[in-house]
Image 1 (cartoon, rainbow, N blue to C red):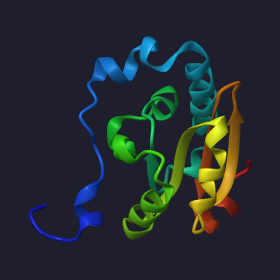
Image 2 (image 1 turned 45 degrees about the vertical axis):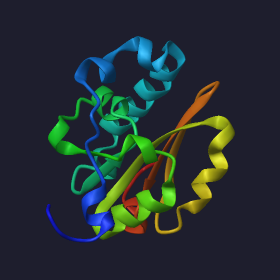
Image 3 (image 1 turned 90 degrees about the horizontal axis):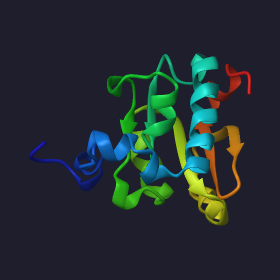
Length: 143
């Protein structure tokens, strides 16, 4: 990836170690419960992601869904709440489904998403997970 524009080269795998990603201390118990519920939903609703690309801003939801690292993309951790940039990258790279973990007090940031529609929301006390899809993904998914 030596050439191309910023969005082509921007993304994906940040320098998170496996231990950091899987540590219950880095996510907190309540946070893991929300992500566990999101993973359970993803596992029970493979039509939301199985035939296309999925982009996440936290690795734990797909982990709890039993997905391998090859089955999803991770958005840059420094920009994980920049949903305008996330959406531009996702649309350019044919991503069908977004899985977004977000503090409840930052829910208004989701207004930046215009090309994706809500599929599912899993709410917790402090954080929630939002699953968004392209319009054709939303139609084939039983939310």
